[in-house]
Amino acid sequence: MKNIFEIMKEYGLEVPEDKKKEFEKVVLDNYKTVTDYDNQTEKLNKANDTIKANDIAIENLKKDLEGFKDVDVTALNQRISDLEKEKETIKQDYDNKIAERDFNDILKDAISSAKGKNAKAITALLDMETLKASKNQKEDIAAALRTLSEAEDSKMLFGEPEPDEVGEGNPIGAVKKGGNQSDDAAMRAAMGLPPVQEQK
Image 1: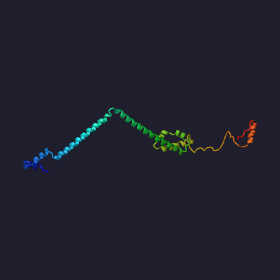
Image 2 (image 1 turned 90 degrees about the horizontal axis):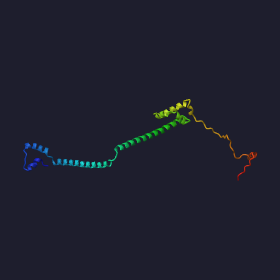
Image 3 (image 1 turned 45 degrees about the vertical axis):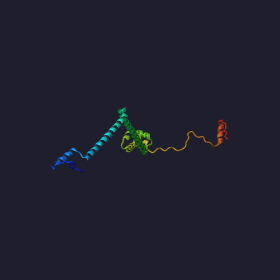
Image 4 (image 1 turned 30 degrees about the vertical axis):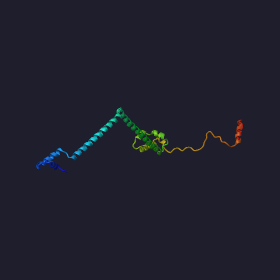
């Protein structure tokens, strides 16, 4: 590639040696090479393409926003807030039910382990709110049941269950079939009743 001085010389122009440095500086300050020009042009073209792309994006956004121009943003935000609260309430209710189920399982097992005879009566004597709020439900329930089983007015609710009475007994009496038929006939005759006719 020829430098500026070679090109000038071909056209009959020559710069004295002592002026070449200063001349070269002035040329470089005021003129760009073809490569520099091409680089700048490429940058400008890219910038222009970006501007066009942004213009298209803005137009598309404007069209999208047209579809929402009648939307009440305040009402929409309120609806979102209501849904968030509803979700939280449902979650809290679910968690409460799980906690209630787990508590009831612990209580049932503890009453059984303490040989409780009447779970309903025992439960009525317990401070349920305090036990539900306890961080150590199992231990606190066991302690509360132990206290009830040792107290004079509630210890009868604990212990081995009383055995069921076994045996037959009929205070009214029972009519038995079979037996002595002549006794039956005699009894009926004494009462003035006709004899029983046998079915064939």
